Length: 250
Image 1 (cartoon, one colour):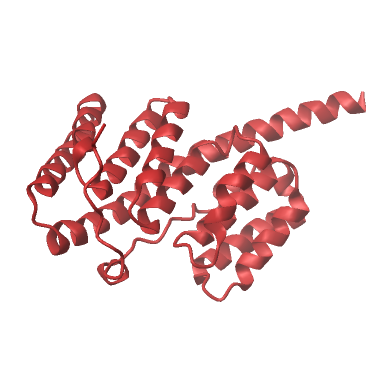
Image 2 (spheres, rainbow, N blue to C red; image 1 turned 45 degrees about the vertical axis):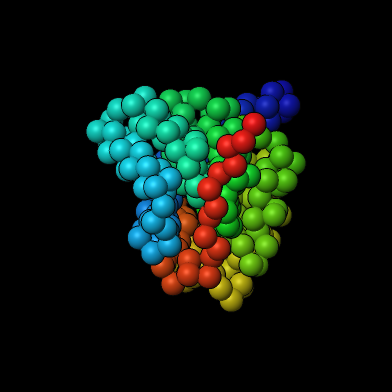
């Protein structure tokens, strides 16, 4: 009988974890829009003047307009028009395409698009954003081993979203029932010198839930505000190399 109750509790815990991740992903994607627009602003107005870039920028802007109007299929088609443009715009468009597929509950396609965006990204500001999106998209379905493989490279101190990657891995460990390990990861996050105060408070709130036993069912984790990735500023991007036109040769 005890085994039956344990199995039911595990099923409830897993379902609540999936619900939590489903709540996190849309907020994460919305927050990333700010970063994407900042990147485009610097690249589009400070670094480029070629016809290919102009066409890519126009297609991307058109896709964003259609997306705001709720025309997901039209937006997807517009973003695809950047396929022969500079790698930077192509990577950003692939992320938008992935976001559309995620909204359509086509997670496998979304992850594939995010992975492509990360692969061709001209720098880590964009590449790691795409990689983190892919990790969040599968956080409720991937094994802890797979989540660790995706997130560990993004957690290096010199990576732009290492704070978010550390928290994501802690959430994955909570979902896998590894509460003590998750608590240790969050404690490290609190002690890191470059962790903003708001993120320290978030980590502390989740640690308190773990210590109280509440996090075992993940019931109250959804009340903790979602950690939003920082938006890169033009100053942050000045040192980034300009993206080159995508290689379209066969």
